[in-house]
Length: 260
Image (cartoon, rainbow, N blue to C red; front, side, top):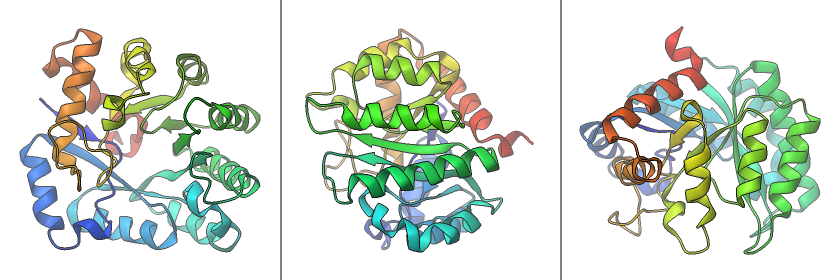
């Protein structure tokens, strides 16, 4: 099965000792495309280094956890985002679950990234989490996307109610599924996986986090994206090989530099 990993933090410290082996193992498992998103200025710079060294794609952005740093670092992020190796703006978004940054800072940071994504015609990579049983982050995210002119965007590691997914699809967003789909409380994700149009599906690991069943719990890795891809094929009643071809095509279309 041909595979992609649309969200792999292989520049993270967890991979410092064996990054090249991890990437080699992913390729051996069939992963042909990999996007390495930054979550702050230093990790965005590291994403470009990894992309250049290993032939990957990079993202540059400021995560909602560190949105309080946006005023200081966003101009540098915007400069990085113009690099040809950077195919996406982010990771950014909203996280009202842990709430490490004030909501006003998160919203201001998000809107800056959405405007930059529209300016550069590069998709924004969007993280979105509410506290269990709530949906305020999802509602605020959709409102910001609507008000910022619906720039190109990808909902990474989908989490939320079905109607949130439906509304995001109405806005033209792509949706990526991760090992989070296997966790208790994420049952709506399976329904969204079934209703997402075939040409807007992606999969990811979000490594070193969100290990799917069978993967090492302490450090997820890109090779384990196969578990989520097989789950997605089962949910949609598709043959894995056919889904794999679709995933490659979707990745190349969304991050269009690959087909230019």
